[in-house]
Image 1 (cartoon, rainbow, N blue to C red):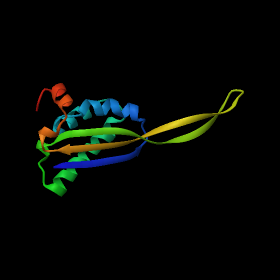
Image 2 (cartoon, helix red, strand yellow):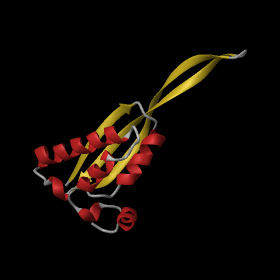
Image 3 (cartoon, rainbow, N blue to C red):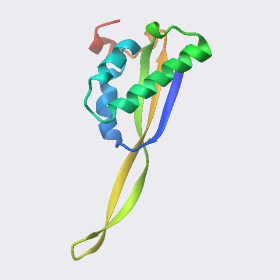
Image 4 (cartoon, rainbow, N blue to C red):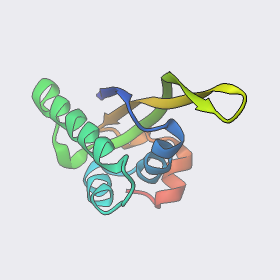
Amino acid sequence: MEVRAILRDMGISPRKVRLVTEAVKGRKVSTALELLRFIPNASARPVLNLIKSAVANAENNYALDANELYIIQIVADEAPPFKRMRIASRRGPARITKRRSHITVVISDEYDLVPRDYKKRHHGR
């Protein structure tokens, strides 16, 4: 059974979030949560809370055991950016783009749904 959680309009750029999400793809949820507690990036805390939310969805709505869940997919997509103007020297306004991201996490209790690339990287279960 696949369970999904989505975080929208987070104020960190998708490029920075992908550094954190690549570290936990394909891992067991308990391992990923421990790993995220020690990653010093600013985006680790929101990703940690999002995975906890997905686990809570699995426990409450589908009666799945949290110790048997795997991260099947975690994606950081680009959200519509905030566009601001700033005065630049001699040439008038310069555009500032404040990038945001949408993060989607999919967890499941079936290890077979984990993509093969991630299984090789994390050496099995």
